[in-house]
Image 1: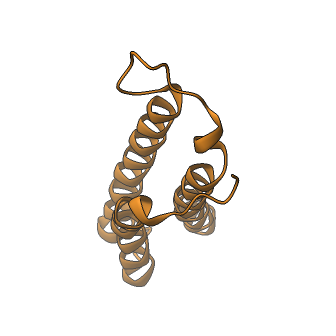
Image 2: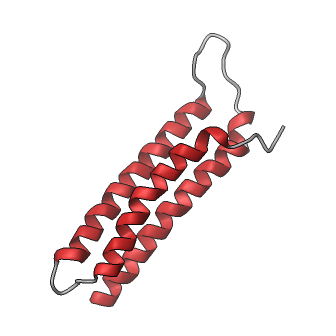
Length: 108
């Protein structure tokens, strides 16, 4: 049971980091190819990015809760893994938010 929970924790952290990287890749490629109507302030690509970031925040919240469970449940206790999960959950959305405006346009 303990090994399965720890493996699931690593998968959740990996998915969160991959979600951030894929969001930045979307920004660098597909984002610029989706047109915006002249009368609208935001386009479909902005809405997709919003949902992407919300999904990243939700996954980060789930990861933080999972890290708290691993930190405080005696049968699952692993302080190192709980800290790694917590840091991954905090740093993934933060890095995405800070790097996002600087991602250049790859596809012209």
